Amino acid sequence: MSNNSYCQAVFPNVLARSLWMWPFHCEFYFQRISSYFALVPLAGPNMAVRNVLVTGCSSGIGLALAVRLARDELKRFRVIATMRNLAKRQALEMQAGPVLEKTLEIKELDVTSEESIRHCVDSIPQRRVDVLVNNAGLGMIGPVESQSLTSMQHLFDANFFGLVRLVKEVFPDMKKRKQGHVVVMSSVLGLQGLLFNDIYSASKFAVEGFCESLALQALKFGVNISLIEPGPVITEFERKLYEEAANMDLSGLDKETLDIFQGFYMAYSKEVFTALGQSPEEVAEHTMKVITSDQPPFRYQTNSLYTPITTLKHADPSGNLPLNAFHQMIFQHDRLFKASLSLLKMLQWRKRRDMDYNKSP
Image (cartoon, rainbow, N blue to C red; front, side, top):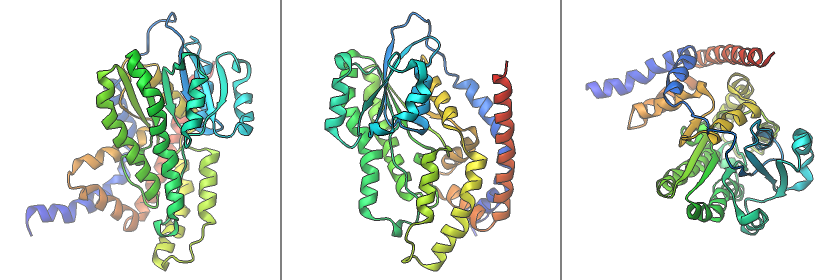
């Protein structure tokens, strides 16, 4: 056996066995890279107020971010918080409280409709959108054989083409002003695929490719583009998504795939969310740092626990190393996988405890 063949056969197995150790190194690793890529806040309270258009604000990250921006202590933002269905505005109104109709206003916007987007942007004075936050989107999990093409197209219409429609509407004005910031809520699944997240991950890969290409042109015009890449986020949206997956029609599925989906993926999803999940407020706080940065990064992962996993993908140009390692970890070393989740739960608990301690007077 050649050295190359030996490495391909043996190293993924060794790596899979050692991956359970990566939770111990996540915080150290994140501290080292974050010091290098430190976000420098925009200077001075005398800056002009910026109009921030945020989509998908009826719940979750969009709601949390809209409220966080509107409650900015330096009053740097005027937030246009949008949603497809204004009948769902009550939660946002309650969270906004005294800033409603002062630094935050709620408007209707459906990212799947060019007319709706144009109507919303036209209603903003001088059509000035200084910061666009594309957050609206859909989720989908389950075996690809059990998903309809119609539902797949519907997801892409919101997740990918929704972003394209928004950019087409606001990007030309940003280029004319030689100023602007497009912030896109992507996902670590736009960098690394995940079992039974085939279509959702594909939509996020499309988003990442679109933004990476567009960023080259944007720089020429003084416009910044930033991809925010969370891992699991604990929201009502996610809960409903897994509820729907648990009730989906799997009658046409082969037994082995059914066992993997129900016996492994669905069984461990709750534990993964407990171990790795962030709150919408945590993601909003990270996004706030990107928006207020003097030199905003192109990519920004909100969850340091995912950084070693996404970094692993670039270790082998062939792609075989991470693929084989994750395959063996999931299907051959499931006990180590469970142990990793337990360690991650402990890290997340400690992280949240420290955050609560720092917030206390």
